[in-house]
Image 1 (cartoon, rainbow over the protein chains, first blue to last red):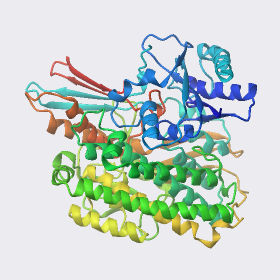
Image 2 (image 1 turned 60 degrees about the vertical axis):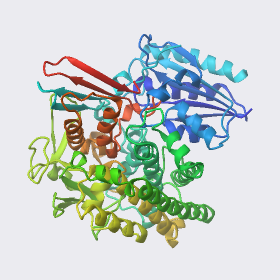
Image 3 (image 1 turned 135 degrees about the horizontal axis):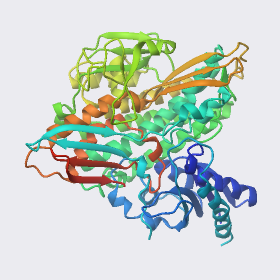
Length: 151
Length: 484
């Protein structure tokens, strides 16, 4: 199964870089010709470009939720964001819309997409380091991604 | 299920205050700003800046990479070789093709193809493709994909190029790569022509839309800025910054190193983001006209500030646009979408010219710098406006001071004015404030191709915007949120 592990975020904006840090660590610990580990700071159509052609995609990103605790880890599926399509104005397309667009245009889309999101504390300060709470969560997310790769 | 609200601090906010009669008294537009970049860059080697600065923004990393690389040329007092300049411009043109394609089809087209009052669930790219056809959808994806391949091939990496060095670039291209880029460039020219035809069919042939484009609600008479070559023609990569007044007369033309003589920044207490203005005219508030230092730098502004395009098909479209809009300069904000497509065609034609240049595969790609670094300023046109990078270093090339003026910041005052005017014209006493009204207000700022940097890659993925309307006593009357 052709698999992509995609860390998304901004590595120079504190907790926003958590997805990329996790991806780097996964790359250090896992090596298989079937698995590509990559990073991106892009969304929408560029995200679509990244995932086309893979059977399975694991995305890691930062998130902020209403009642979240910094460092909390969520395992989600694209459907968890499906309501957003109706909320969105066409500023950028979201993940669900990007997936629908790919299907509409008969692109080879992944059969399985899993998202690991880490609750962020600081996403507005320039820093190459995550906050301690988020930093602490990284080994656990890496473990979860590695487990997912074994499935 | 959890409740993602994306970047709580990362969304744009529009606050509309009504007067006692229910009309609009004032409008404030706030965009998020990441904190502390100047501090973050201090103490780093200047050569790292093209890699670091492109991380500021998930939308236009290539623009930061290029402005930064040019700032390094100036900092190290080195001229890039002719081939290096051409390779940089070739990559940059491919970037413009992808970026302008995205903006038009994802952001602009839904308003016109689906209609400004269509429900948001339909007013998106899926709706556009369902209506216009799968073939066009495929062409959008293919053009973007192919030009990203060009960026990766020349720039060394997808999304974040790593090829810009003081004095040149890090790698040459071979004949096989050149031939493939030529094929992509030619195909992009066809795509540019097709996109202008779509605009013609959907917008220009629809009287209601054309009237909206020409309406006073979406019109501002300001100064216009853009990079021009030695013949005053549009250039994205290099040249001097030219500014024309609201009547189209040249106001000034300056080399990048002189930008501080011409620009100053106004500060308002309600936003951290500054408002650049023309120093020699002065800050007179959020007002139009020749006496106000407010300027714009958008695709429309670049065309207004120049005497034309260097490529034949884009020049033809340029002439058609000004003839339709009643001459130069054009003050119609919504016509920016049209100008953007003309720029897309120009970028594709320029790719063809550059890739057919016999020098493009030359291995002479670097002039090794030998001078001591001190201060450097680099300017390019980013898709959303003139982008300036300014670095001061010690004699080892370690950054002591860094200043950036990005596209959206340049347009900050004009964006605020555009939103206010739309709000004043559209919100009337006794008229219900609806989702459709919110979209019409959005249409006033959408042409600026706003870059809410920290919101661009957030899950679930859109740049959120919140509009709050307050009555004369400051009580919240209505809040409309999108993507929050």
